[in-house]
Image 1 (cartoon, rainbow, N blue to C red):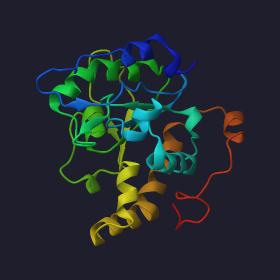
Image 2: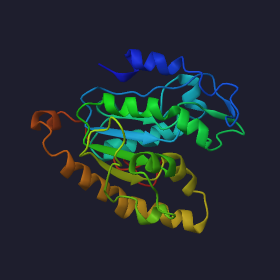
Image 3: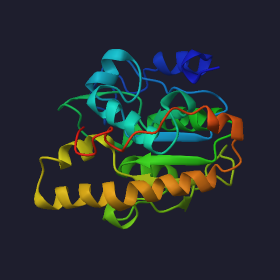
Image 4: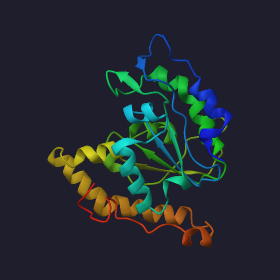
Length: 233
């Protein structure tokens, strides 16, 4: 049972709340609902779809999606075992991939919360980027460096079950840009590879330790964070 095949996903695809509303910008082809099995214990949250996601109708595609898959394999959770949800469901196309407006996020909030709640067994939410962290934790430090890899209690919201944990991390698209970015970006990437990503792996293992041992034994061989060659994307 996958979220993308549920009536909730059909309702999201048909949503027109932001169309021609003041405070909303030009949006993509259609809203993109989340993916993943109902019994997922890990749910990854991103800001909103980009061009590749808008074209495919699926979250986390293209180069960012490929790196995301490697990250999840490194952490021990193949894509098909986890949930993926966007805070805001539409591609913001003018200007391309701009941050969603407050009204757009507000309009999408009920859809976001209903998708999170659909995953009945989730224990951990991986919040990728500032907007995802705000939507799950309720606030975000001015410097993400200070909180990446830490653990936070999810903020209380109507309909949310208490007890699940949020782990903030960088969005894969930012990690890709870091490789050719400023010296600060490159230092952040080195820190992420060497310390923060392994820390997240350890915390995920601890927080989901009651997974069935037989299930664990069937997981594919884990890759390095960026493939077998740690220097390659």
